[in-house]
Length: 306
Image (cartoon, rainbow, N blue to C red; front, side, top):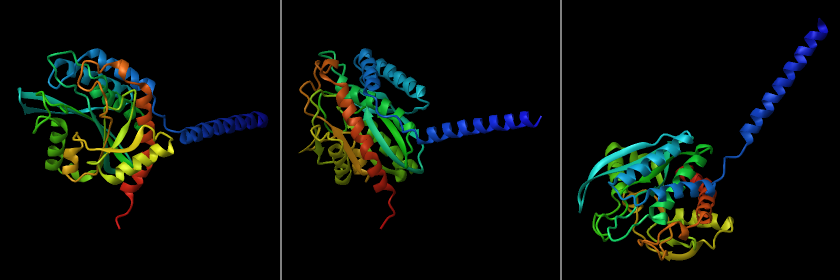
């Protein structure tokens, strides 16, 4: 009887050891890394839908795809829908937001647009301009869900970045970002938004991202320093540019903001913006750099005020 009892105790001890080892392994396992093959498949699926301008049935299909893919990662996308006035009349637009809780309720927003520009003269599928940012955000959301985040992170898919008319002028652009900021001001949620990171046109095979002079200097420095540490500074170059994009409404509202964009893309707003001119490698570069920069951004945003 004593022998049987000792056997049972020894068996239980082994079970405990195995469970503790598994728990330790789970606690120490690193968060998943950005997987450009996943991002590329999202990009391929979005481009297969075809042109996806704001207010179209096709952007509804794109939205459904994005929500389904996020759900497969255990994330729920919340719609922010509204009707906006455009040169073509009132148009229904929808931002999508996914919230990933962090140690603090203060938020860091990582955003990009998922609409494509409306062209009637040719078929514009926007592999780089609209497709690359949306595909990137689906994948980065999956990665960040498994990461220990110092701040709550919101992954934001913006509608209506593109001008509805032929030219970018006046208020015929950045519909989604302007609406988001207006709502955040009204409901008080802008106070918890500590920084805004924008990705746009990041799929160019010949990726060369310049420092945007409209962006917040300290955010730019952190990201470019991360690129240098990752030995990817041949993609994040020291040359400068000045960009108007979805980050401008956030900057105007006092939110530190950065635009990661490669505007040096010969196929920009042409029928040639197709999959053959974009690259999974470029998506990987931006994913690696952004994830490498996040700890320094979090440290800056969580440091005690002096």
